[in-house]
Length: 277
Image (cartoon, rainbow, N blue to C red; front, side, top):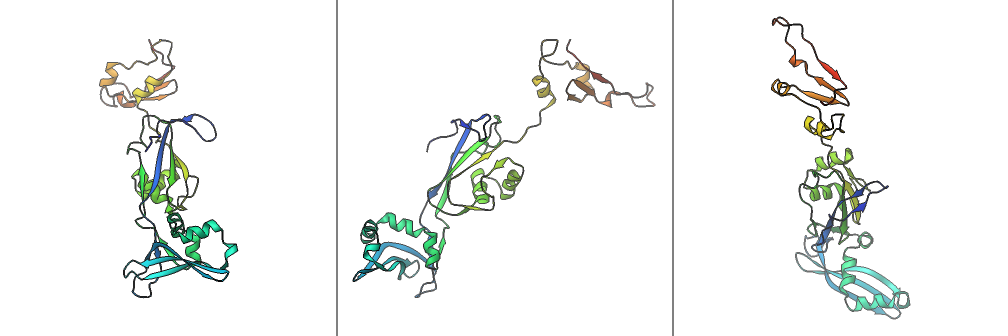
């Protein structure tokens, strides 16, 4: 599978490019089971035999898809066309029925509309797996660029979005919901919805809290030319906690001597407009 993570894709709505991209593919492992009561045993799971039956009665046709019971093997019929005029059925489609076309079998075996019309259900368990080339660290990158995830379906299996995200990111469902609620994951559909068609989502890394050293390094150059503010060895030994607030550095009151220790009353030293020397 191709690696899409190095392809730059423009972010939605303009702005900076998305430098990271991943592809998730819902791979097909098999066709869904047709849940329909068997008249010969207690099983309710059937599978297509791969064959159709076409019965002609004058100018009228009946077409069925043949299925067999998973337990006893009894063959049953799913009606596709009943008492239809030969001229009303496309000749190419009729030829596919007569030749037991495998593509036609596959499409009809996954047809939810046909299942509803013929009063049976589709059991998709064990029919798919998620394949992706993401690493577990993708959501914690040094690069703050969002991750674009393209999700493609090889078969129209209905998967709840919450389950799909938990599987793809390797997280719990509660963690996934928290990321969606906080805006770290942006979805085009509801997290409770069932997806069966391709869609794209965006995931952003968490905002990181900068340490004091990182804040100092990232400040613009000051008049001193080295772009930093001096912290003396004495201050470090005293365990001074510094908090940068624009051009202001507040020194912790822990430096002051407590009352009754022989020194002067405690003071908090506050320097504004501190510049490098």
